[in-house]
Length: 276
Image (tube, rainbow, N blue to C red; front, side, top):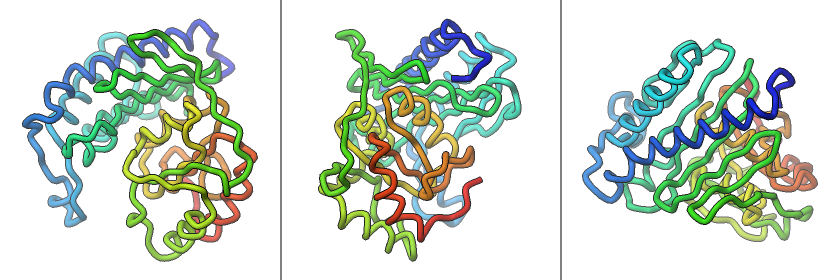
């Protein structure tokens, strides 16, 4: 936790972050499994299929409006609308729909990611799944799952042996070259690998259902909500060398039990790239 923020301030910011996630859900849910106005950002840049929907854009606009009304001096970095005062003391880092491919396929594995930096350090994170009514929120003060049934403390589970670990990645085909070789070593060493959960898998590590998530090519809005959430639940977010993940994203590793870190990084580090 930032030394200059009191527990009461952190609690207030957590509550506001959950409010933002709920406001995003109000925009997103009417479009889930409906006509979501699909467009392809990749077609504009010559890249592979990179979907965006009216739900993505509408949800981020709603979040930004709420932040401006409550904290007009805060900065915002979002996937859909870019940067606004990224060097402010407080900066919200937003991904309105992480897992857009799942969203357009009707799969309830997409999430809304809301992170908050204070003086450059991630201090509050929310991973929300409005369709299932799950709001995973965390900071250095702890982590909890909020549902209609109430609040539940989140803790990662002990797992010091990679051969016993339940793991996830979004898509193994995203790894190429040396990264693919490293990922295959990891895959072979793990007990189980699941695909396609995107950031919902991060929340499952915090819940103690998964042990490791390995990803690559991430942006700041993909990772910053996870850092405080996992810290509060007893896990950690790192790069493939085991160092703190950079503010620009890149290669990411989440472990629920820090005792797993040496075994996982031994397999991934030969393909690690510099963290920015």
